[in-house]
Length: 83
Image (cartoon, rainbow, N blue to C red; front, side, top):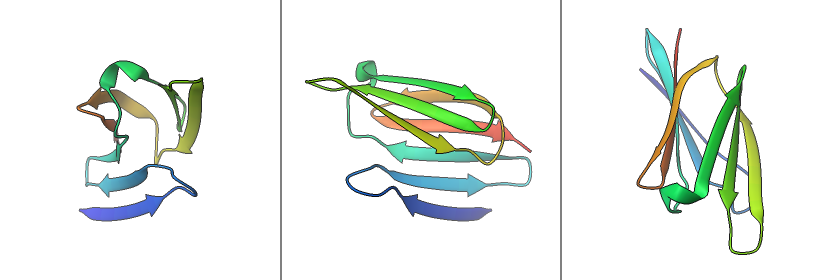
């Protein structure tokens, strides 16, 4: 297993990427309620929208491949894909 850790600039979430022989996982602790997060994937890009108190905040990040699933549980975003 390979573990790659990156952090976006500013106050962005810490992203962790885990690569396995048969797939990969990208995880980020958003620190917000699950109901405030919407995620969509297009090709090798994840689009995350968090509803804030004033207005929504949208972030995009590259994935290591096409996503098979995406979910938010207890404020932690996970996107999984296969090799």
